Structures are given as C-alpha cells and as structure tokens.
Length: 124
Length: 124
Image (tube, each protein chain N blue to C red):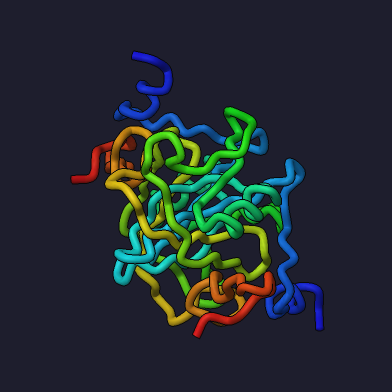
C-alpha cells in the first residue's frame, strides 16, 4: 500500500499535528448538525477531551488549554471524535450544555455570510 | 469598541490569514448539513470560488490552486460562504454535484471515529 492509502485506511490514530503541534478541530452539534466553531487542539487538549468528556482546545491567543464553557457554563459534552482521511483535522461532535457557543453570545461562531457586494451580512 | 468587538460585529470582510497566507475552510453539505471536509484557502482561491461558484482551495501538498472535483467530476457548487466571529476561519456551504467528496471515494472525509481503545473505527 502507498503511504497515502495507509493513512487513509489505518485503524491506528496517527494524527498529523502541524509545526506548532496543533490540529484544527471542527465542532458540530450532534443533535441538529449545525456547525458551531473551529478551534485547535494539541495532544494534551485531545487527552483532556477524551478523559473529561468536555471539548477542550489549545487557545492560540491565550497560549493555554481551554475547556470551552468552563467560565461561561456553555460546556460542550462530547458525543464522538472523528478523524479525516489524512489525519490532519478532527471533528468533535458535541451536545450543547448551554444555549450559546460563541463568545459573542450566539449559537454558532459562523453568524455572518459574505454577500454579493463582498461585504458581510448577519444570518437571520 | 474594542478590537475584538469590532472584528466580531463588522460588516467588512477582513479575513485574518495565517503566516502562510492561508485560512482554514470547513465544508458542509447545505442539503443534509453533513460535514464533508476541511481544507485551506488563500486570497486567490477565495476569489475563484466566488467568481466560478465552485469550491476552490489551496493544496498545501501540491502547492497549487485546487478546484475540488475538477478531475473527478465531484465538484462542489457554492451555496454561501460564512465567516466566523474573529474572521480566521471560513465555512463553505455547498451542494454536491457527484456522489462522493473524499478522494478515497467516500461521501465525507470524516469516515472514522476514535474508539474507546484509542484506535479508529469506520463509521457505518
């Protein structure tokens, strides 16, 4: 098998962290499938996520581990963790504990779309 | 307003590309909300996506622009493009032209989950 086939078909977790030791994590609501946020994990954040059952990340701005909602109460309970074909991104499927996800007090971080003028508009 | 509030609430597109000139793009099926893939765009890939209406990325491995499905026929027609709160990730909402998305001939690149032993298993 080629290396590409190996990584695509293996049952071993062999995550491809970037040069910063990070991997992007897409976060999706397992109940209604809505896309909630994108963040980054390092090895330790992933371990804590698995151990505690709450979505945990590496905050690039604060340079520390960050369990989403530990302060606000809007924790994200893990349903499962999926891995993509080449093992360089993760999908956390979660159940929301609170109402909001975004730090701006919205249900998702993706609350604006690019309009035909090239600007942004809020999604209703 | 603080800089954080400005970027969160502005109607101006002011994307925060990383040091490589890239921004991560989550790709979601607009019809069934399933998560299809994660890839990267640069400014030109985003322009081409807007101009042509087909999801286009920057391939980090091939170091070239990449319109998903141009070779396989599994193009992704754009429905809309969403931006997250701090404008450092994008969401392409798409309609699939073909059956598959992943280069492994699957409907999504996220076809494996981490199991309780820490290995991977295929999602049925």
